[in-house]
Amino acid sequence: MIGIMADSHDNLTKIKKAVEIFNNEKCSLVIHAGDFVAPFAAKELDKLNCQVKAVYGNCDGEKLGLKKAFSTLGEIQESPLIFEYNKIKILVLHVPDRLDEYMVEKKFNIIVYGHLHKPKAEKKDNVLIINPGETCGWISGKGTIAIVDPKTLSWEFREL
Image 1 (cartoon, rainbow, N blue to C red):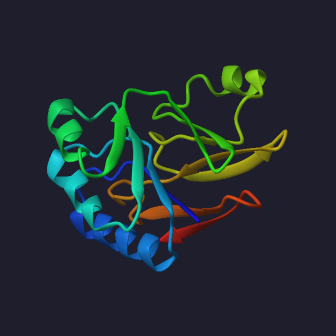
Image 2 (cartoon, rainbow, N blue to C red; image 1 turned 30 degrees about the vertical axis):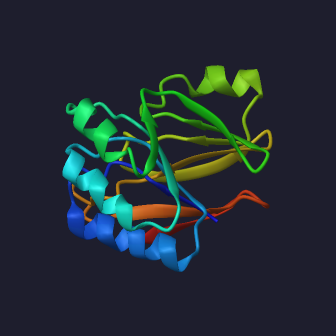
């Protein structure tokens, strides 16, 4: 399973709950689509039993601190992050402003984005496009994450 989260905005309680769910689901990868905010929030992901791939969000100002926090976690970089995982091509963005362009390229199996704080997923031309919503719950009042089955590209949103 692949765990997906975004927009955690320093909410340690929700991040801890997300880590617990990802570990219980035996996720072999967690993707964070940006807006940790502070490096101490990223350090909570040290308790995951898998690697993390992430992009910076528009609220991630302390990038050097986040990069240092990721030295034991996995990888964080500016958006877009493109990688292959078990023969699945994945694109990770924070702001979904170029989704149409990426869809035209037809190079990805999964496109992950954040920023909008609303969970949304759809399959379009055999591509899963997914926003896990806001992990923090600050705007909507409920934190959410997503779990994706990499074999079927099916997904489930989980409330924290």
